[in-house]
Length: 209
Image 1 (spheres, rainbow, N blue to C red):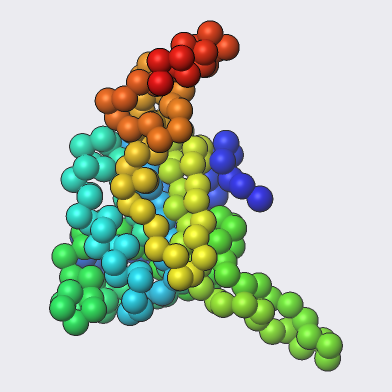
Image 2 (cartoon, rainbow, N blue to C red):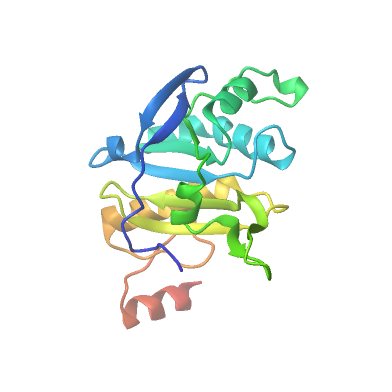
């Protein structure tokens, strides 16, 4: 079930911040009333597609920050594993140089609450508890506004890397709507025409495009 339009699930969990420091009670609550948040899940540390996404967010971090947006990553690994990966050089498959927070969801409760866990517990024919699927998170991306409401989400299957530029476009669309009250049509980018959310506005936009 989609979280769009709903309060983002709250949590407190360990995280690594600034690429080197472990904190025990990290929460998105610190951004309420101050910043929008891009909160993204990735499957696992020390893997293959994941570092390309994590570095891609770091490369665009300045663009997010100048828009007043915090970027926060999370996976079902421990904070110690996050730290080890953050201390590993890029040429060795590591993510050294990443400065935004990485949250540890070892209990998988955050992934479950956001609806991105790639499996679940179930009972087999002998009533033994077993995990069906993969005990990792899908590639979920959530744009959460300053009020803590989820405004956009995408969830990719494990092999499918996300487009960070598309996430940035969604931030621009949200901010444009908040500032001008206009809605953003298909393939809209910052600087292009948006439109009034009326029949006349749609008609005028379609006629001119």
